[in-house]
Structures are given as C-alpha cells and as structure tokens.
Image 1: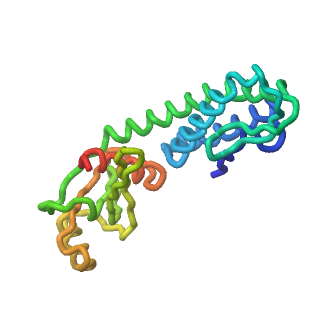
Image 2 (image 1 turned 135 degrees about the vertical axis):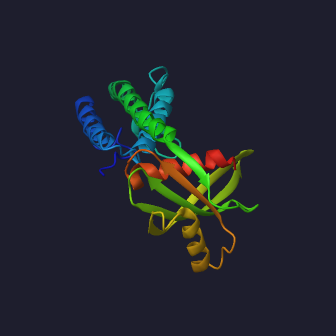
Image 3 (image 1 turned 90 degrees about the vertical axis):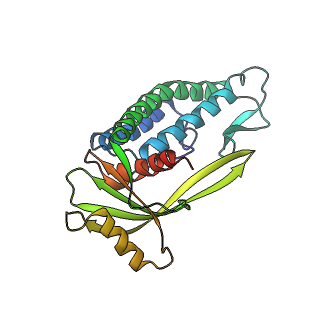
Length: 236
C-alpha cells in the first residue's frame, strides 16, 4: 500500500496539476482494492484525509483579507497553515483552495463507496454466543468464520475504556491465536473447550462467533468490521 502523506497538500511543490495527479493516483489504488472488497486501511485513511482538508479549508476561508504574511508550511498538529512575517502570497493560497475544492468531492465519493462495502458486509454478519457467557465479557475469544471457508479464525480480544473531555470511549484489541478447521466433529463448543485447556489464565472465557455469509478478505475487511460489529452488538 502506498500511503498518501499527511502533508501531501503542501509538501514538495504546491501546484494544482501536480496535486491532481497525486490524489488521482492514490484514489486509483483505493478503487483497485475496493474491487477486491478490501476496505481497510483505505476507508479510515480517506476519512482522515477528508477531515484534514475540511479543517484547512475552514482556516483559509478568510486568509486573503488582511493578511500580510507569507505561507511557510502546514502545522500537522492542528492542521493550520503557518506563515512567516513577510508579504502574503495570495496566489499560493488560491492554489491551495483550488486543490482542496478539487479533492474533497473525490474523497467523499470514495468514502461513500467504502462505506457501502462496509454496510453490505455488516448486513451479512451474525453474532453467536458459544456456551454460557460469564458476567465479565470485556475479554475472551472471537471466532470468525466466512461462508464456505473451512477455517475458523480465532482471536483473543480485550475491550478497554477511556475518557477524554467528559466523553467515554471504547476500543477493542485482538490477538491472533490459531485457525481451527470447522466441521461436525469440531464445532464451536469443542473449540471453546480446547481454548480453555490451552489458556489457564482464562478458565471461564467469553466466547463469541461472528459468522459472515459472504466471502471477504480477512485482514482488510472481515476482521476490522467484525470487531466494530461485536462492540456495537455487545453494547459495551
């Protein structure tokens, strides 16, 4: 994957045609991955780039009125343009605005396409508790299985919570354990018993299966969507 640099807007030469080529080349990669139903990390990156451009756009709306400084760069911490104490370069500001106006609709379109794939996959997911779930469900195992695939992918998960600016956030981390071959002789319940025997630190784990009736890439699509789906369904 060739990432689009966070400061692609102002790095190297600020030229409209050059930046058009840069964004179009990046989005071509995104489209090729979408064709393979690969959503991540592309969708997350697109959303981040879109938000960053919106922030810069807001910060440049009134730049041509009253400024007597020259653009010198971009502060990646707060996405504000930096200026040196010389005369303003209106042409450069205009070019940046043109690049933003050209890029935003393209990013929005690809974000929409990525979300469409995301929504389609999520509609074909089903959560199933394996055995009796303990009272503590913020850690345990996720069993991921796609339609017509032989392997069940087992991940140990842990849900964590943190608070910032009076808002509570939740996140889920996963660690790959192993693959099991799903069959009548090896149902989910047997996998659970085997996991308990192998990991004495979780003697009574919460175990859930996320089944998908579509066949999609594991790392780029199934796993990241299943994690969000699981957290949402569990209501942590």
